[in-house]
Image 1 (cartoon, rainbow, N blue to C red):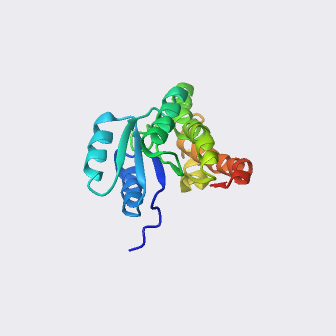
Image 2: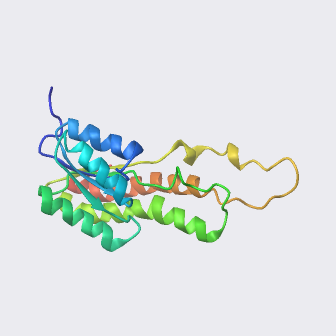
Length: 191
């Protein structure tokens, strides 16, 4: 079998479980070294330990809403594996997302994780990708960015304006990806 990602280094956010862990496993099977970036130390450590049987992994406790934490994650990838070639911005509030919380505070929390975290991680790894001659950034969005059926008013009375926090952030990820591609493409960093 051809190892398409041999000698490549990937960071996958939200890699402790679910889709993030599946990305990490696939990259390992394709020959990459993988940094599993996750806020949950237990699932992150457990996943890294289990996946080490497939290939080189490193768990880095990462809060994607904290600029210092994402910089430390990028630095850990460089220190452990020599650089960064691939970033998968997968971490998001979804499984534990509270659709009923329409407060401004919660809207800000969802934006910090689902959208601003994508920008922070990308900003942290881009200089390291430039040093290696390019890279790939994969931003996980959702069809929810285009789903407006849930915005219909309830049949009785005005219930207030919902925040649609998840949908807003995933639409933002799509736009951010386009802007990042325009800026980073000249350094062979594609989205």
